[in-house]
Amino acid sequence: MFRKSLSQLLIITLVLAAHLLGLGLMFSQAETNPPTAKAAAVMVAALLPPASQPRPSAQITPEPKAVPKAAPVPAPKKMPAKKPAKAVTRTAVKTPATLSAKPLKTAAPSERAITTALHQTAAPNTAQKPASDAIAPPSADAKAAQNRAPAYPSLSRKKKEQGTVLLKLLVKADGSVGSISVLKSSGFSRLDQAALQAVKHWRFTPATQQGKNIDYWYEMPMTFALNN
Image (cartoon, rainbow, N blue to C red; front, top):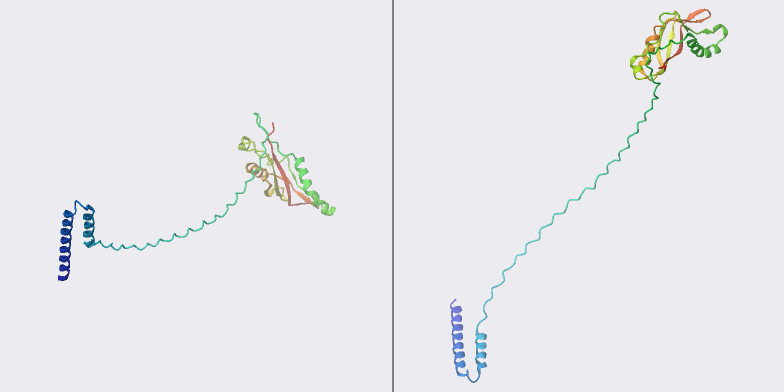
């Protein structure tokens, strides 16, 4: 510490002496050689210790932050292709004939028409059997009070419903209807039910075989038509 102070004092003394020497030279040689003073000033400056420069502070370089990796984007799932809806086909219904203003009467099926239908049904059975076993098919009793024509439903008239219903019935040995069902619909349930309700109460001449009455199945059509 003492040596450091002594060194600083010596430097200051030398600086002052250099200044004094420089001033003397300046005054003595100002007129003859002005550049000498400038050289003295340079000498004095050279004797001065260089000013201590501040040490550059150490710069702390921050560590680079780790960049988070982007999460992988999941591939879009393939949606199953939708199956095209099945086209619904509608059956066109023919428009029935126009109703007239006059009240319409539905005629009961004639005995001839019923008999023809019965003969057509019974013909194959007769051809396959010997003459002695031939069956005479039944026939509707046109004189029987029960054999009334089916009533044409008023709503069916209003909606112009027409058609032919094919009935399958069992005529028993006593001429009554034992069982009846719709073999083929007319296309309208009201007309089918009207035919069933009427024919199930009918009386028939029973079928015969070898002179005896027998039960017999056969088919009978019943037509509902709006006549002009």
